[in-house]
Amino acid sequence: MNLADRIKYLALFAWRNALRHRRRSLLVLSTAAVGMTGVLFSMGFSNGMVDSMIRGGVESGMGHTQIRPAGFDQKRKLDEPIPKGAELLKAIGTLEFPDELKPVNYSPRFEREGLLRIGSYQEGVILTGIDASTEKGVSSFDEWIVEGEYLKDRPIAPAGQEADLGIIPCILGRVNAQRMEVELGDYVILTLGNRSSQSVSVRAEIVGIFESPMTGVDRHTVLVRRSDLSHLFEEDSSEISNITFLGPSLEKAGDLDAFLESRKDQLLAQQEGGSNSAPAQRDGNPKASFEILSFFELQPQIETMLNYIEDIKGIIYGVLMSGFALTLLNSVLMSVFERTREIGIQMAIGTRKSFIVVSIILESMILAMGGAVTGLITGGGLVLLLLPTGIPLGSFAGAVEMMGTMTAVIYPRLTMDDILLGFYVALGMSVVAALYPAFKATSIQPVEAISGRK
Image 1 (tube, rainbow, N blue to C red):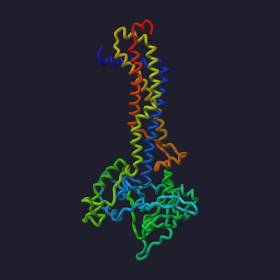
Image 2 (cartoon, rainbow, N blue to C red):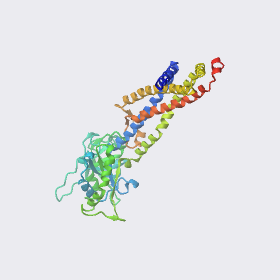
Image 3 (tube, rainbow, N blue to C red):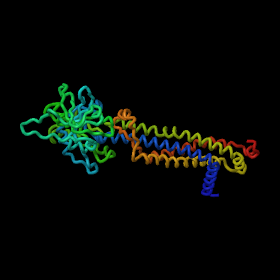
Image 4 (tube, one colour):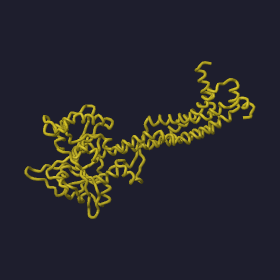
């Protein structure tokens, strides 16, 4: 008998043993299917949760890359302006982005921590000053408007005449509008600290109400014009606390970040007074007034969660499939005990122990793979069923808000790596579960087995 015939005979032998007791095999298959379904749904939900946080961060204005004041990565002070931010913005306008990074949109913002007040009600918020014309290219606030209209850029005052800042327009999130019982056309008071660390307040008219997928963004964001917020911070100033870039995709965000880093010296030179002037020096190196941060540097908790999920995937699979492994162990062991006489006869006529061991392992693998395929169909089908509608987390709004930019609806997603890892775990557990039954089979004494004494 050649090798091919031996393999064919071994496979047929294992297949026959796997299906010998169909009820018991069906129990093993159903256990494996339930375990695989739980594994795939858990992975799909975890992936969807991370996707939700990334999508929420990008759409709420985090972008793919940001330019922030030097030292922001350590201090994390949102309202610190970039020195000579207006000059830096002009310098960025001279950059020629590579074709593979296009389209690239960018927009400046000026953010200040402040208070939103009406009567006795007040809420700590981030006053976000935007340039309405360019902000549409880097965030989705214009698409989230449910009442009223989006902000318009501040009109240019006639020569020699200052613009009236008695009342400024603002946009609130629906959460705050409902809590404060205000509507379009009502007035609120915005309070912030100016450059001299004095508290200044301004009356603001609600011209629009937005509703984002993130409760936290709705509650803590108030949009105003950057020019208005800069004037409150310091008269006749044009302050910028960050410049946000949005490239074609998050996958190319690293290339966008690298391109900006490669042009940093050029931007510094132009920021300091023209393309022919050199930036200030410190210890022989340019003294940077800004730093370039990628999305995951701005949102380290998302990267931490991604790494955490990758690290514990094997553990999650092992825990959820452990019940299946015990059921499989019991099934294969019972099959060996029921075939004691048959195994004894095989060994008596010269069948090698290796053949018996491999046949038992193959029997276990057949049952495991059958259950894994069934679980893939049910688990994958469940994820596909929930993909269009998502999983609403409305009843957990408080917990969702603590997750920052995570949306209240999770759209589960599976990757090929998740599916393959599930099959690898099922295959590995089938081999482990077959080791003890295989040991018991090879320890059978042919004479005792045939005589029925064992």
